[in-house]
Amino acid sequence: MPSDAFAPDKKLKFTFGLWTVGNPGRDPFGGPVRETLTPAQIADLIGEVGAYGVNFHDNDLIPIDATPEQAAQIKSDFRKALKNNGLVVPMATTNLFSDPVFKDGAFTSNNAQVRAYAVQKTMRAMDLGAEFGAKIYVFWGGREGVESDATKSPVEAIKRFRESINFLSEYSIEQGYGYKFAFEAKPNEPRGHMYFAVTGSYLALIPTLDHPEMCGVNPEVAHEHMAGLNFVHQVGAALESGKLFHIDLNDQEFGRYDQDFRFGSANPKHAFFLVKLLEDHKYAGPRQFDAHAYRQSDYQDVKEFARGCMRTYMILKEKAARWNADKEIQGLLNVINVQDAALSKLTKKYSSANAKKLLAAPLDRVELAKARLPYEQLDQLTMEVLMGVR
Image 1 (cartoon, rainbow, N blue to C red):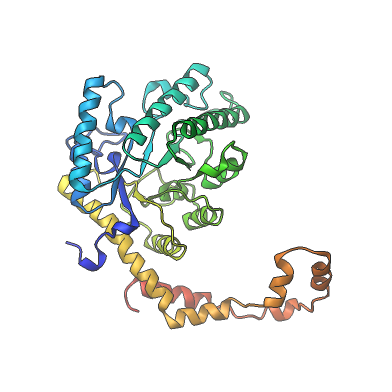
Image 2: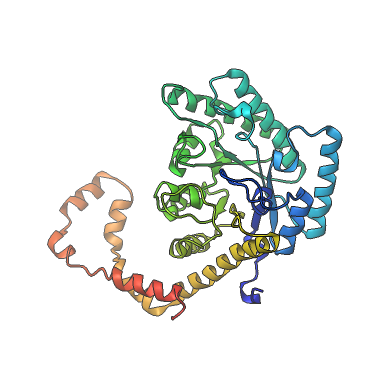
């Protein structure tokens, strides 16, 4: 069992989706290996491991073909489980990818009736999320893409996506839901080529929306690693622009299919710098573990998987604090980061006077190139912090 020092901290808002710990171990090459749990049973499991909250797609909670009576019973049982386990629902989302109707996309479908159904389904799912107190609404366009560009115009697809988001923004405002929309990028899978492939794609889209103030991003570790990108940099861009509304934590070997491994289990160094970034910049939103236990696991091992996600974050949080307090590391940072208040003042904001002064500044490139950059030493000290020898 985890030591108290690394037990989950409720202030960090660790959450799991119903689809994560409730995943029965199905993959593209084999059926389920674990029994299917009800939403209430999943909430019990999440509560047992000490998480803060639970999130859901509409059809994780209510099957798409459930009767009104069945839906009412499921919601009643789930609400009781949330109360019994002290859980909240910070985020909700819509499944716009599983049903055959979305085989060629939802908001970007070539069929206007499918696009209308996708917006209708999302409105109803937003109602459901609001019923359980969700304030963040995630959009993952799992089928928004193509296998062949002969089939769909990317320009029209982006316009259609924007129109849907603008419509849904107005719906949220009119209903008084107070949602913040968070867009989740992915480079490929299940479509051969996905629109909005990386977090930066959505950061570029947001300013073109009717309500950019209510829209941000939900980056996921695995999705950026699939494309071979540095996830820390994507999260940094979201933080710098004030658009990190939610985050999905898991792990992933670079360049593979979407593996959704336990957080920190494949790339602990990347996970360390991610945790350090979030903690240094005081990210206050939910930290969702959008990951799955190994297919070989039974539900007891699934609990260990969930505990492990949170425990690894807590361990890396402690190591980040140790890195920040290490005198030798901080000394190297002082050597590397050369400050010049006068020059910084000149380049911070353009004016004709500042431009003239900058052009006249005696900056010697040969001398500047001689500056020490002890990056090997700094990285080695980082590794020693990670490996527990300093």
